[in-house]
Image (cartoon, rainbow, N blue to C red; front, side, top):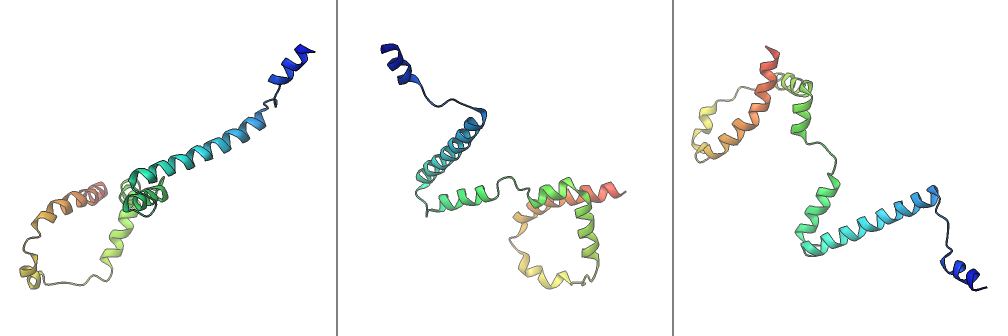
Length: 125
């Protein structure tokens, strides 16, 4: 009788692969929820700027940036180049010379960004 009581004390639900997978799915969902709550608390609450940045990062998780798409698929850049050639309007840049003062700092960034486009043009040769 004592042995039966002892075995009954340690008897439980047998673990089957299906039961384990169900438990694991629920466990991972719960862990992710707790992790998000901790991250929100660390950045100052659900309505803070840090929380909004976390939400944006979560929404964009796994998405490829536009630049990465152009670097990966050169046909995208070529198709945009053909669109730029259609209906272009000539602009006299001398009209804007006085307005361009102090914008030299941005020129370095533009050169860096245009290096990707230059790589596509070189491949066409």
